[in-house]
Each structure stands twice: as structure tokens, then as C-alpha cells.
Length: 404
Image (cartoon, rainbow, N blue to C red; front, side, top):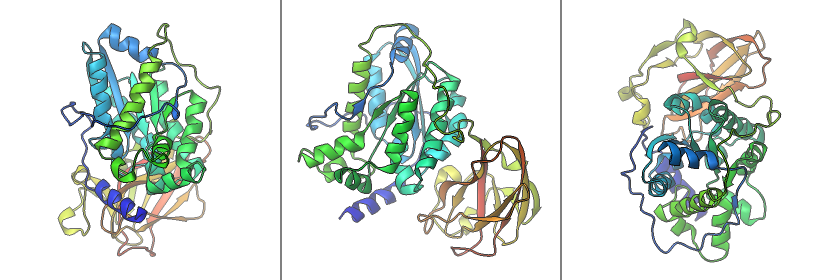
């Protein structure tokens, strides 16, 4: 039963679409007869006076949401936006929806500048990646920390006054882990980042587990990995409780304190997208919009007009000069996805399979990191398509290189 629920939820994920800016004309009405949502799994850290005073005094505010399909969808996000508009009726809000289905916290860190900070300093920021770091990326604790810390550090560096809320959603395997009195790897790793930066968290995963174990909620009512309005309303209610409590405090607007150092020195605190035009093409590679009509596999429309650095023949070669401590690629990997072999600074070629569990029928967006612990400074990479493949082809379709 659980596997069917998870499979249905993941298929639904593949059909979603996104717009980075939006108006709250989506269905943001919260369902009635919600269970009694507790404050047990609302972890208030730091203060949220900056956002309150900005909304009240300046009558303007930039609120941004970064995450995967749970953020992208018509879910908790528009409910929170409606709550803010009702709480501050005289405030003109700018809302940024930077949710992209399937993406993990690593991709989030690499695209924070493009998708969030480019819209201006953020006053109130929401981030969720627990589910995608778990079921999509399958991240280690280290990778989950490096991605989430990269996001948080960039937001705070851009605007030290930014108030941040981290949200942990839930899938069936995470639910089962919590029921076994254990902590899911992804959300517990993100929680370490939240504690380090004194950021409040909404542990929806644990609250949903509590409600289910108390027979006050069923997984079907919640709606699955991509929650129904009923499930999203539980999350929105928890956020309302957090902010309402935090906004009771008195004080002046002030910069948030910064930790003495990073949680992980190799976190993607300077994560960025690197233009594919920076590559030196040797053989087999082109930069153009792929001929999607002739390529098997479903596609998401948001990616079909993007010029990509592409090759389909084994042995295709290119080089890239870059600077920083990390290098990887942000790709769409479909049924024909191949394996990249990468040599950095003259080292041995290492294989990196672009094919993903979800690539069988979909050109799936993902970040593949080659190395995240390079010495600071300039580097040189040689990249080629391997003769080996886990799929029906050898294709690589690169939207951006990623670095740190």
C-alpha cells in the first residue's frame, strides 16, 4: 500500500509546472475540520521582528519560497501568502515562487542567486528540501548539509535582516522512520543547519506522524507525498502558529547574528550556475535547443526552450577552466542519458552516471557533482562521454555547470 502511495505521488510530481512570480489567485482557502495541530514540532529559534516591522512600517515585503514540487505546487505556499496578506492588509507583497519539481538542496544552492536573489533582498524566506533530498537525490548527510547550508548562507549574506523558516515535509519512508523512533537522514541533516544558524523549523513530518499515530489523521487524508489541500493546510497552520508567536515579541529591527564559521567548510555557500558557453568544445558537443520532438521520453515544458550543451556520441570531448572548490553539471537526464568521465587538474578520469531512477520515461532535472572538496583557486577539467552506459544511449544535455 505504501509503495503504491509513493509511486502515485512521484508520478504526480512529474506533471507539475512552475512560474517564479505569481499572484495569490490560486485556491488558498484552507479546508475545515483540521485535526488539532500542536506546537510540539514547531521549533522557534531567533526572532522574526525584522519581517514584521518591514511589513508594517514600509508597507512592502518580499517573501520567497525555494524548494521542489511541494513548493511549486498549489499547496502550502499560497495558503501562507494569503495568511500574510490578511495579517498585513495594507502591505504590498512581492511573492517569489522558486520551486522546481525534483530538485534537491544542492541544486537549490546552485540556483539561489538566479531564482531568488535576482528578485531583490528577501524579507521572509521559506525553504523545503527534506523529501527531495531523501527520495530524489538520496543524499548523504554531508550532501544534505552542504546544500541546505549553501542556501541559508546566501540568503543571509544577501540580506542579514532576512527572516527564514525551514519546513520538513514527509514521504512514506520518512513516516515509517519516525514511527520507528528514528530521525530521517535528510530532515535531521537540515535541522543541524537550522540550529547552527538559529533558524526556526516546521517539522511537519513529525507532526503528521504524531497525528496518524493518535488516529487523528490518515495518510490518505493528508494526501500523500504531495499533500492534498487538507495536508498542506496542516503545514500552513503550523507556520501561522510559529509566526504569530514570534511576532508577539518586542524589539527593534536588527541584523541576525552569524555563526563563527560554517557547519561544513565545503558547503555550497557560494554556489552558482556556470554558463555552458564557458566550455571549450573539442568534438561532438553543440550548444542549442535539443530537437525534443525526435527524442523519446516525456519532457517538462519549462526545459524545452533552453539551449543546452549536448552530445549523444561516446567519446565526445570538452574542457572547462573554472575557479572554486566544486564542479558539477545541472542536467536533464532522460531514457538515453549517458555517463560522463571527468578529469580535474590532470587527475584520473572518474565516471559519473547521469541516468536516474526516474529517467526511464522522463527527462529528469538533476545536479551531478563531480567534486565538492577541491582546493580554492583555479582548476581545469576534461570531460568526455563514456563508451559505457546504463541506459539506451550516451546522451548528455547540460543546462549549466555548477560550482562553488
